[in-house]
Image 1 (cartoon, rainbow, N blue to C red):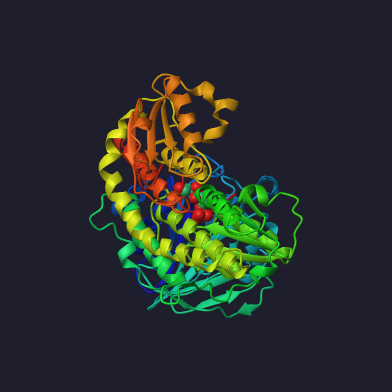
Image 2 (cartoon, rainbow, N blue to C red):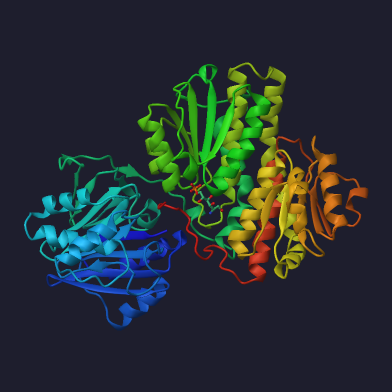
Length: 606
Ligand code: AGP
């Protein structure tokens, strides 16, 4: 996803902008650029590829100036190229943009009729010329306001002005944007992670806000052009999470942190002394809830599918799950007795945020399960249940998935207890299970570290692969397939094992790798039968189970025997070999583990 940096300082800014752009690389991008104001002129430099390429450009021809904006672009409109890289500048303004301008075609046509000459294929350049045009007739704040009102769609903007050469302007609608406060300089950034290396004093903009930065003050205006004050937050230090340490990449570090994630999360919500779960001031009495709707994207959506099984087992509440990009356009029969739960690691996913916004507009109760408590989704929901996983830098989500599932599991247990749908003994046994989980995760990581690399080879030459599971293993099969796809760029499909005979069995042929998830749960025998159907057709089966039974391993290519546990906890343990398998296949293919091609860590556009 795109990333924005802006700095208004009393000293040269180019190097600091480059340094901060590198902090945004994890978001995924394909080009980069910078603009500064020098002697009341706009100086712009940009290039395709990595920030390193931009740094080389600046080394040859340094950018002076104590005011600047920078950008890493993830292509939406227009191919990744130097011409389409941001900033987009006229003689009067320079603009960097995250988001999508939906009426850019019409606006571009009107501006071309006025004589403006577009150089790029981007929607962003429309903002540049709109501003330039309004500045001919209006002062700064009115010109900004009229420009923003003309735009349909989402944006986070950083803007420089030749005529106002001591300010950097920011504006937000639908795409996250924050400002940071420093000594003798102030900052604009897409998220706190980019600003953390320069300051821990942060203010988040809300939709409709405009901010004007100089090197010694920041002013805020709301969508009615009124000057407003905004809260300054002090960010916690999480150094231990934002450095790879001895690990080769963030993903291997984050996989190995999963027992810590579980331990931290359990500690946050479980009072071991009182053997009770604490959900603090939950916004709705669980006894009154008529339905729970779980909503997310990608891996976060898979945690929702897993949670559906837990809620159905532990409570009598009807549970619905939905992909956010579907939910936001569905005709929903909202009911204020329902609870709408939004799961999102970043808390900035555009589709999930839009789905939440739709719920807020319909005055229903919302709860978010996020990893970034200062995020837009967290700040917009009635109640937040943090997963406490610490910053997750690898684009492929691992520890956040464990955290999302764990908070959803804890929520299901507590709601069941409040509604008296679980007896005291079972409730306390579940709490004991939560206490055991971190060590089970650690044992499984250690076992799988040694046993997954050899399996990876089978996937490199294969024309695809399948991941099969039943019940609580079905969403984990989906997650395993997603991990392999997004890390190794090889096709993989997650499927309910019971569905194979309804079509996908036709895909099975000699040597096709098929991962079978078969914990010793109520579906075990059925899943093993499905496995035999695959073997009979030449499939190369990788069996992941916690069962010692030697017979089931005949004609199986590999058996991974993970720690034994009960069926409620098996999703946590089944996930780990799949994460490591995807990791090792990607490593064999020399893929970029932390920044897979085409992908972004936080998808802040539709
Ligand atoms: C997970 O490996 C992916 N990177 C992606 O599916 C991610 O889960 C999805 O984009 C949702 O992101 P969020 O949790 O930040 O909302």
